[in-house]
View (tube, each protein chain N blue to C red):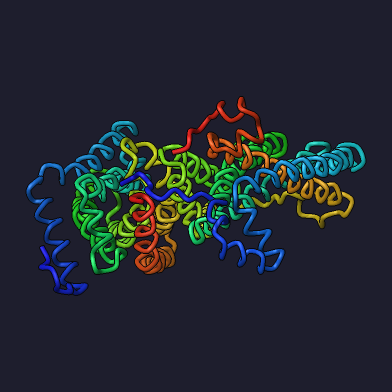
Length: 231
Length: 283
């Protein structure tokens, strides 16, 4: 990909990595739909469990949608580094002349754009299915847009820590879900505050602040975790 | 890739002459600290001092329990139910303190690659989880008597429950990875990330609790805390700290022996039977 002797810049590597990830995703289009289908199924199951009670659904709609997106994102974490660890590309990351944290950041952002962004795109549809009041939809979308990258960044640390474990399904959930608590509280809390007629901006600003901090710190922690997992 | 080529063997490097000289020139305290990092020295240190700490903890614990159960008068609002705080509050403090200690040991282990610190950090995890569980159980029992419910989504209870999950995550990750050293490093990194996120989790849960209702009952009630109620608490706090240090050293010693099983010094110290009956084979 990169000729020997040349020093690739940060943007060049980012473009190459993002291009490769997107190409791989396009060649396995069916797999890319899975988190989306999972989120949809969670919503359907919740609706079935709640019974045909539109007012009750409208009350819990924001919480259910947040949970569906969070659980689907948690399941998608496993694909973040696993295939690269199995075919040895992750070792090449360690040897690459660019910082490991940078590669991690690019990978996490591409992963977010391909798993979480489609879910956010269909959220209005799912919200309609759950009778979410229309005035809460913009706040729900804003909280998801700020919260899901945060989930991906925190989840990246967990995915990197568990990449050397073969069957890590439940363990990833056990490690990641407690760390997701603040994101869920502020994300779902912003919509809940709006539903009670309070100002949701405070929670959204806190999510934004968390996102800024995580953008800087999470790739560094993830890089350290990859180094430990591959040592 | 997962096989470490260079096995570090503390003590072996000491045989080289210049290093030995530089050790002799070190300050005694620094030298003692360096030597403590070597598994045989740590074993001797831990076996001596864990007993000392256990013996020191016992009388303090007895004084605390005796004062808490018999000397302190019953409180007017809660009768004898409040006495459970003499278990509850010290273990709640320990649950947080042990997590911080675990992260500290992990940070030292990650930066300076000290094997003993990895062992100490991982020995902290089950004990911290135990303290958290005791806190939750005693809090729940107290809540049944005082609030009339076993569980309430009180911010403090909720964050304590999440703390338990963080502990279980660290323990789970440590046992899921085969290589003991990289398992300890991975779980240690998780502990450090957890310590960074704990205040945020705590704040978020407080904020979330504040949205719904704020629990107005403090542990000691609204009235000013009476001094004679506090005295046994301090005894218990000191006792749990001492007991924790004793059992931390004992557990770390056992893990250390397990990891070093098969080495000559273990067989020498424990006899051939102790050397061969190994729980964790060294990799």
